[in-house]
Amino acid sequence: MSDIQSSSLSGKPLGKARSKGLVILVTIVTFGIWAWVWSYQNGEELKAYRNDGVGGVLFLILTFLFWPITMFLMADEVDKMYREADEQSPINALWGLWFLLPFIGNIVWYVRIQNSINAFWVARGADRPSGL
Image 1: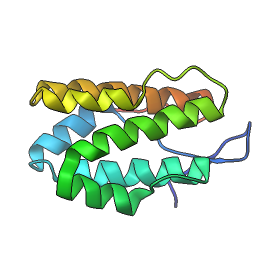
Image 2 (image 1 turned 45 degrees about the vertical axis):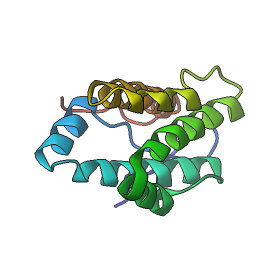
Image 3 (image 1 turned 30 degrees about the horizontal axis):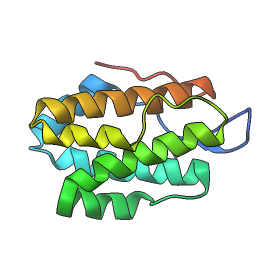
């Protein structure tokens, strides 16, 4: 069974709102490997909803090879998703600059990105994240 739900408002496939704490915990426990999975999942969901974008496979490759690019691209795709819905985006590509602040910058960036993605999906009918 797919985690992607269909929006009752637009008929577009919705992504899954994810627990920020759980993703951070699993990323730490897996020594960063879960970040690759997270990038892939969100990339696929953003592309499916927008019918445009980088997609999960390229996000996975970029995260593996040079993760700062993912920070800029993911923020840009979330920004585009909001703008295409005629909404004010809470994030933009410049948020990728958080990679310059080791460790804490990654957490600040991730929390802001996940909050923005979760808010978009939930506003369109996706389930709120459960867990941490």
